[in-house]
Image 1 (cartoon, rainbow, N blue to C red):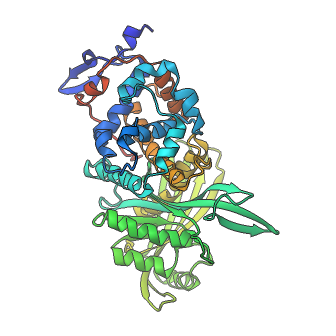
Image 2 (cartoon, rainbow, N blue to C red):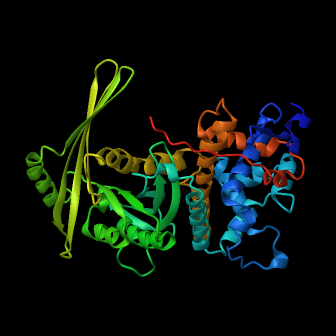
Image 3 (cartoon, rainbow, N blue to C red):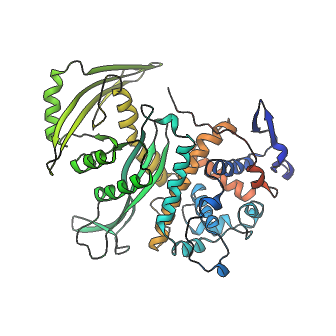
Length: 473
């Protein structure tokens, strides 16, 4: 393909039925993919300079080569391309072949080095980068991108869970958490993440709370303590947003129920055997007396069949250790899936909730409120650990820098989901295989695509619709 055919120009914007679309026949794939990334980000969040304008930059202006948004974009693009290490920026993104692309993104005409990012981020406040991520999610809510995914046409389902990000045999820093087993001590770091989850695979990061020991404290920080801090911040950032928290059984306790009630949030908490035994006893005692609280749902897909048998009990009284009363509903789902050969697998799920369960809402509460909690682990943590983002890699020994790199990783994951579920599905009908392949293609585009000057200006003039259609199958 010649450089002329790979270039992006205003002639590639056509009008078809009142809607402006790109012409796949005229745009080279590499240039088109990079252009789609820049367009999706600009369309949903605005100019990057404005997005990162509220980051306080303590560096001396006369000694500063790169603006904050340029540093942030470099780190985000490192994660998008799956480079997995800061040193790869100097090897791959600063390659001389990238001159045409870099001219469109950086004023200096060359991508900043990974060490430059590390030094600059070490002077900045991770909380300000967290606010940037929250503002991006607010933009998605305000523009109704997430509107079709609301549970019962009202609640945004937010899954909260924790995961380890670093494990070592020796102490990494004074804030390391410790775990001793068999006489051996493991030092580790972990985070608690809040993500908007949807049945069709979105796991949009909203907020990160770092689990870490404070100097001089005898008691360790833990996932539950971090949850309370995260919940306070989540309420402060989104005070009016109707939320349903989808939580693991770790959070099946009175203080969590009380906090959700105080903040006006709904919850679906996994109820395992042995968790809140008084509620389990009440459920098993009352359920046989309420045969009307039953529902069976059957589905068929070819020769495969799935049957879900629901039962529920309302208003079970639970008194916590602080003598506070909570009225909980319990949902149980027995699910049996049979393949074409008649072999069936049966699983049991149970949740406690404050939603007021009825025959009309029990199915969406279980399938769209309780079950998507797994997506924070599968589409969230697992993708970031094994999909090229390098969640378990230590990107910096500096505490501030390490936290900022982690938050920018969440922003990169957000951008990739929007690109994969919006731009790629529509403008690349043949697809690109896995999301990891999109990262490989972005790196190829960064290194090889020949783009004319003014591409970013043209992108701001495009009028393309980006649709994220929920899976209603």
